[in-house]
Length: 224
Ligand SMILES: N[C@@H](CCC(=O)N[C@@H](CS)C(=O)NCC(=O)O)C(=O)O
Image 1: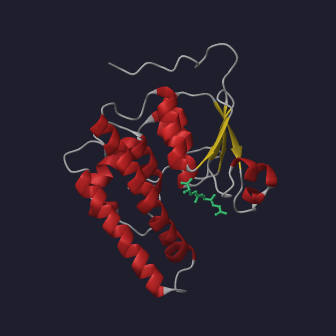
Image 2 (image 1 turned 60 degrees about the horizontal axis):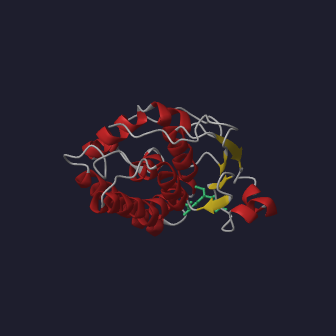
């Protein structure tokens, strides 16, 4: 049975989640999840290139001075850290996280894999390989090798599986925007056919196509 829409959508005064975000993988995770869930939200751009993440108003919501962060006015709750926000949105709506102990833990397991592995490692690849090429060859080599190892892990996980936790979940939503930077990582997705198939299937989802361009459109979704 398709999941029920959360009861507060479209009822009474508009319930609004304020999303503080920028055009980066961590930010896009949340706009994609909000689009998938059909939750009303307002996106507030925080230009991290201009240092807006250090403004006191933003630090009151996100003390680690990083996007994304949300304020749920319904719940009177401010939250930072994309993994925590995804879990919160899934809990709030009862969607994008499977029921049953093991399926639920599998989704959380792969969400944590993204948070502890893919995000930090791919982030270092972007820093050294894309933005500072030639300055630190050892760091380029080390983080690129780690990125390829992680792509291999993901490819094996997706062999014979549509999504990382079987059904589409916040784990896929957390991983996908990082894979969408495969060109920055100099990674040829043809080397990882299961990842490529999964990536293209998620890229075709209307909610992903909308959420990717929040808070503004920078480019089309890269397609291998
Ligand atoms: N673990 C955090 C990482 C967030 C993060 O690294 N955000 C970056 C953009 S993708 C940021 O705001 N950087 C600004 C800075 O470091 O000053 C999460 O998943 O939310």
